[in-house]
Length: 89
Image 1: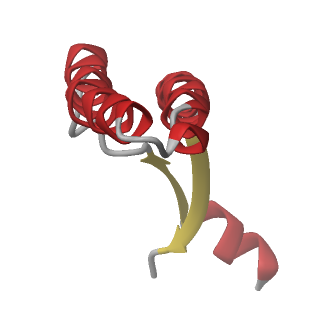
Image 2: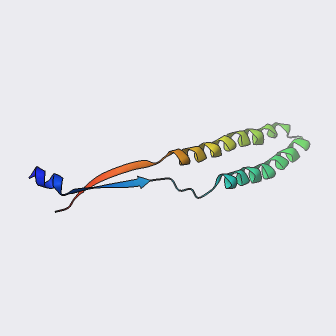
Image 3: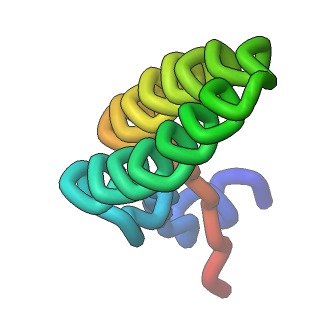
C-alpha cells in the first residue's frame, strides 16, 4: 500500500518571498524626509537653549539609515522553499 501511495504522490514547490512594496529609492526618500523634518527642529531647540536635544536626531538617523539598508538586503536574500507532497488517488 505504501508503494501505491508513493507512485501517486506529486511534488509541489511553494516559494514564499517578502513583499517589496518600497524600493531602495523610496527608502532613501523616507530617510531624507525624516532628516529634513527632524534636524531643523533640533537646531531650533538648540538655538533656544535646549542644546542637549541636538545630538539625538543625528543618532536617530544613524540607526534608521542602516536599518532601512538591512531590511533591503534581507528582502533580496530571503526566499524560502516549501515543499509539500500531495497524494492523488
